[in-house]
Structures are given as C-alpha cells and as structure tokens.
Length: 286
Ligand SMILES: Nc1ncnc2c1ncn2[C@@H]1O[C@H](COP(=O)(O)OP(=O)(O)O)[C@@H](O)[C@H]1O
Ligand SMILES: [Mg+2]
Image (cartoon, rainbow, N blue to C red; front, side):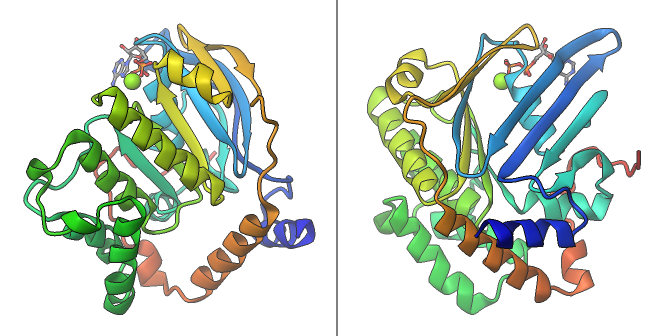
C-alpha cells in the first residue's frame, strides 16, 4: 500500500512524502502591509486525521482555512496540499485543486431558490458528472446525512442543523480528500451541534481528512482529537489526538486508485472548467 501511494505521488513529480496531506512551511499572511494576520505557521496533517483549530475571534483561524482553499495566497512560506504546491497553481489548476477540498461554513451558504436535492446535485453538474451518476449519488448522499425525507424542501424550510447537513452532503458529494469546516456548529444549539459533530466524525472514519475550526472548547475537550491552538496569528500549541489512531490504509489505497482513474478519464476541457472563479486567482510561479 505504501508503495502504491509513493508511486502515485512521484509520477506527478511531487515529493514522495509519506501520508502527509497538508503541510504549512513558515507561512505568513499580511492583509495590510506590516500587520501579519498569521505568521510563522508550521504544521503537517496526515491523511485520515481529524484536527481541531481553535483560538479567539481574530486569531487567524479563517485565514488558515482561506489559505488552504487557495482563496488567498501567503505573503511568505509554502503550503503543500494533496501533493500540490499552492503557490504554483495556475488559474485553471486552482478550480481543479478545489474539487478535492470540501468546505463547510458557519452560515451554510446554500442556494436558497433550489431544493435540497438540487443543492447537492448542482455540485456534481458543475464538474460535469454524468446524469446517471448524479441520480444515483445524490439520494445516497442525502440518506447518509439523514435527509432522505427532505429532498424536495428548500433551505428556508429547514432547521439550521438540517441546512448544515445539506452543506455537508454538498461538500462530500464529489469525494474530496479533505473536508474543511469553519465554525460549522457556530449557529447551532447543543443537540444539532452534537448531530453535526457525529456526522463529521463518521465521515472521518471513512477516510476523509477533517479539519474543524471552532471555539467550542467543551466539544474539543470531550472528543480528544488533535488540537492546534492559534493566538494572535501564531500557533501556540499543537496537541496530538489522545487515541493516537492511524489512518485506515485500505481507504487511502482505494482513494488513490479512484483518483488515478478519474484523472485518466478527464479531457483537457473538463479539467479547465473554472467553477468557483469568484476569488482572486492571479497566476504566478515562484
Ligand atoms: N480581508 C481582510 N482584510 C484585512 N484584514 C483581515 C481580513 N480578513 C481578516 N483580517 C484580519 O486578520 C486577522 C485574523 O482574522 P481571521 O482569520 O478572520 O480570524 P478568526 O477566523 O480567528 O476570527 C484579524 O485581525 C482580522 O481583522
Ligand atoms: Mg473566523
């Protein structure tokens, strides 16, 4: 299995580094010149890890998420995610890169004028998934998040917890390697928070790397997962998960195989579809 992983990465001219899926190397981001929002950020995340990022409001948590999405570029340092050096991504590569990253926000960000089914199906249409596949995958995913009875509802007819489950289904439908969640339970009561967290834990058990920004300290303490603490833009602590659970290598192997298959089946045009070109996406090379 390790051999397969190594082969896949080296054939793309990426460093054949173990199971690291996210790597920050002395990263800094200044929005306003001279005032870094984050600085000297160093961490590695392995495939299959479940990681909390915690810290006070304004400490730089969302900046880290935006850097991982390549929504913003670092002022300094290097970020490698899923074998890609984010500083070197061309515009068309950014869209393709983001397909491997699922993302969930505090305010759900659903399409208000589309049904639950359409919200999830849309994410697949954007990447031109075959209609047959969409018809099969959408109900299956909605069932997985417990929303089979709500497929025809509109977001405004759902509770906050249900809306967030739609957002999670949408984030997962294209099999991302990583799920990023920025305060996913920030608008939810305790019961819905627990339900969403259980769902995220379950997703992680099936092999997806999950990174959650939160300031729910009770939850973080209870779950005993890895916790990265940010203060004033610096990482001030990084505690490993108490359970020391290693990622499931069978899942990783399956994922690598599926990715390789998908890449083989893609045309250049398909790869160039720029489906979330709403951010600053200037081309640049180092
Ligand atoms: N687009 C922006 N322009 C200027 N400053 C920003 C911008 N976004 C965030 N900041 C600043 O960067 C710092 C970190 O913000 P952020 O990453 O949103 O923190 P958190 O998510 O932990 O609340 C804050 O001081 C914030 O005011
Ligand atoms: Mg934030």
